Image (cartoon, rainbow over all chains, first blue to last red; front, top):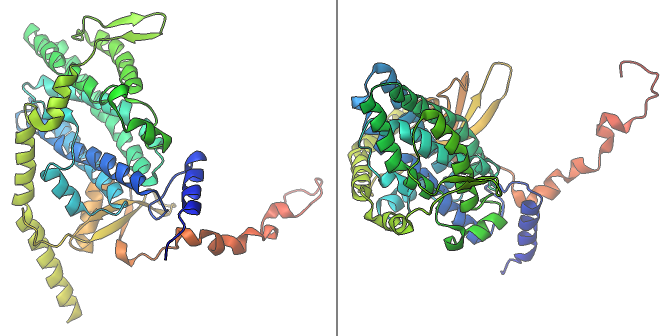
Length: 314
Length: 97
């Protein structure tokens, strides 16, 4: 029997128009579901892959305090990945399937995590700029139209503030140190500034999904709007820190009431997205190894649970 | 990659944020059994003192009302305005009511 979809679609559109939330068991257009799966899964994968660049420094953190902070931060990233996988699963896709799509390269993660962390200052810069950019992206997503995604974002945003502040504090500490330490901070900011701007995605003109995502209330602002907001927020922070942002075109525009800034290298962006960044292969190899090496643990835990269940039934 | 492993079952997690409040649904996670689900829930959902008590229940054990039957299901309460206190006119000079 052919089900008449018109009234279902009407109810869906009315919910969106009323700024109300769509919940997992509601009817939704297949494209809405697929768009969300793609976006939320990509977000979840980014959190999980994002553990690697900073995890790189846990054993080499300069003090117990810094090590405890970094451990807590990387553990948070794992938690954020799990909240988001949990939200993605409510759309009818299994966790195993999501892991498989990541490892097989069928779903992406944020290109920022394909850049290496060459010095300890990078831990601070990632907290300040990368998590700062993430916060810009994520705060509006707390009001996204899909309920479980919005709820996950609320939890995440509460925790991101710690991430950004610990990074900025780390950099402030280094800036109060030796000339060599100040140079380390500047060098790190020079490397991460442009990739951080790329985190907002391609310019609006090259972002074909944006219009539909905004009509559906999945996205609340365009890539360029968020990028502008991030630049305006970051400039005074850089000044307070005493570092230079590596963009000769960066200056305040009185007329617009916003900063003008240069264009990121979009050829580099697309190359990294397509898998040719400095660390793409390493990140994927590490994720796959972690999954494969953990197989025996997953199997043993299942066997143990089955045995305990048997014991109860005797 | 091993495909022969069955996926750990999905559990829904409910957290009581402090004494005196209800447990509230916070999300889900995978675990081999309920005992592990509790431990994982502690690590995933209560890293900042968000809870004093956790419930976990297998997702497949939850029976939910259907969104498409929402209207008929909740209709019986729709027309019973006399269940609300504002239905009753009480003179303004009657205190404590």
